[in-house]
Length: 402
Ligand code: C5P
Image (cartoon, rainbow, N blue to C red):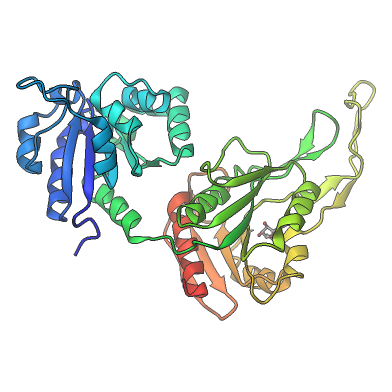
């Protein structure tokens, strides 16, 4: 039996060619036992008729603030309270912009603004619109506010161009909803410390030594723990990304700052995850003035070792605490990862190999293998970092008996 049985779903449909797939989505939701209330934008009705949708959902489709026939008021507030989940599929660039900025000029946006339930957004648009910074910034903003973005796929688009922008297939959208409803608040009452992002080690006031880490994997983990009820503190090196609002963020720049902030928090947590890509070395001196190149053919910067944050905190770990580290290896790296797990006193370690295409720094995907001290091994496929975060959080939940 599907976890969607009896769930109240508000399905928002907007004006994209992918709107025809909303019929299949409705069918699948109804088949899973959900009650579906469709809200469609005026442009959406150009692509699929309300008659098809009301027949499939067995409910009148809402589009206007007032019903044309009898003047009945369609209450977006009531819908916001009725829903267990809102799904906007397909979501056009225009709707995504309006959602992000509260432009409440149709029933779908007002419903969204009144929504008390989680919201899933499945974008569909042409590749250039999808890649445009206004779209990506709006989606980032919506994700930051706790909405779930169901990433569009690459493939042939309505324009016959090939690229990213195809709405995810209805079956996969249903799977994302089922996934959401099948995980509960298993981390409620647990406190989690995460380190994430790179560190920047100053050479002078304008230059630093750093690395390509974006912090995305650690932020995805922070979001997943928070969603499942944990109280999360994220010590985040320089990153343009931010987690959901309920995560407490402590922004830091250098490894030494990261360590001193982590030292403050680590005694109070049940779980610590070290996902930061800490710079191994820092310049011995951070010059207070900008270094001049005039008259300098060569420049030598003397480096000193940074503290190992994970190893330092690992050496203080209490038996009631569970620590997890990361190992990013350029080779296969299994033995190296296991050695680091023991050396840094981790209970488990996440290995990602740079040999795997699509894994590691600055990509949206990752491919990981998890090891624990008891000899447990789990290898996963290439997935979005958000999906990898779920696997890691599930893996830890099984170890903790949650
Ligand atoms: O030794 P290596 O850098 O590969 O170890 C990776 C693990 O150790 C990661 O969990 C990383 O966050 C952590 N680490 C750390 N402080 C350092 C270096 C690595 O916390 N200075």
